[in-house]
Amino acid sequence: MMEFDENKPIYIQIADNISDKILRGEWKQGSRIPSVREWGAQIGVNPNTVARSYEILSDRKLIFKQRGVGFFVTNDAVDVIKKSERVKFLEDELPAFRSRAEYLGIDLLEVLKR
Image (cartoon, rainbow, N blue to C red; front, side, top):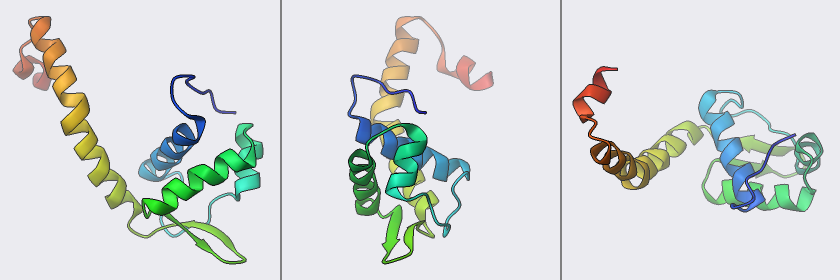
């Protein structure tokens, strides 16, 4: 069962969780992933919600459907995820971190040394 943040749509959280699994190597590139119904049952979510997540992942070119067989992780999924996560980190997370560090009087070089 997944624990969900009520401030973010569940289908987005599922898609993000799957992206993390791919990035960590839990779901290998080229491998078959659980069906919509299987994954929904495992995480305790309606299959329609999982289907919406899979649609997002398909649109991002992280997974693809092979008719009659199931969904698979694309061969370049890790590179695609890293590229988008780098952009998100540099544009969203790093500026907030930097601002907070400056507010607290933390030298960024000190952070890098730790």
